Image (tube, rainbow, N blue to C red; front, side):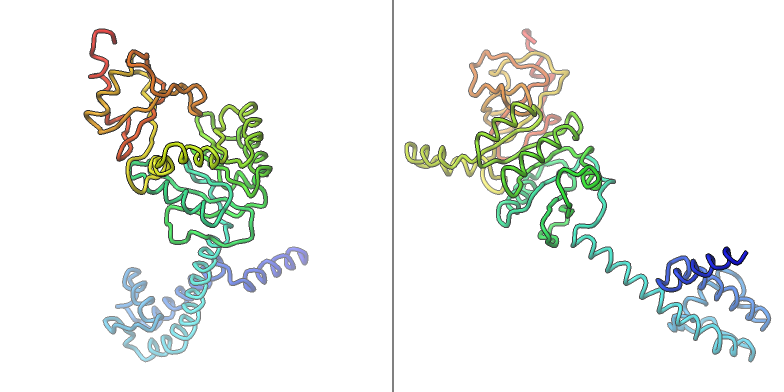
Length: 359
């Protein structure tokens, strides 16, 4: 019995020391019960119905005091002056302080990247932060006005606070490692739909991509950016679900030299913020066989879009650019095109395209 009593005292002291919600709830409930009991003894019948008492208790204890309900007997006024208001006001102040502390703590967790995002699904995760490049990536993602609405999680390992607080669609997670299972669970990487890996260096990008390629769901798509072409080639050999990009500065410089204006074409095609942009669309699997000519004319006439080519996988490893007009296309293939805005699969009249005799 003494051991039980000591444990009870320790537990109660812990609640008192941190002013826990459980303690505050119990204290408020006890204070309300004592106040109601004393008002009942004071014969304050107008204040005793529960709905009336709760309203009266909150208004009077918080010192708002509308005056529509008040104690009328001498003993009742004494109870209000010595029991209800002094102790209730103290409880009310502690509750407000606790609530403010909770809000501050929650906001602070969001700024420092300590929140748990295990509840997210089909979200976008960006690994790595670069002062200029990462913000541009987020702007380009949000600039797609027909994109699927989903949360963007920015994951970093640097000691920093949320760099994109002004972006409501961007959450912030500071991880100890990009390859630790527990840390990856916190951002629910297993349910992410799109992943961008842009590490501090090629080694971090390579190890992160290697880890995530075996963790994400089968239909998820991973893109990784490298400065070194050799690491990109090596990763392509081992991870078929990772699309690797490397710096194209040399190619762009030569093309701009040989064909002036080429660099501006590249900028226009890649940016969703202005001008026509390059997009992709997966043909529904139930669509029958088509030719490039069927889709080319339809896209230009109905969506002001120009088809560039056809790929047979998400990474575009077997892409055919500018194929002949009789090139056969079927459900599951991926169309790459240029358009003022994204064309959704639901906006295309696939049955009309497939109504021709050869379909």
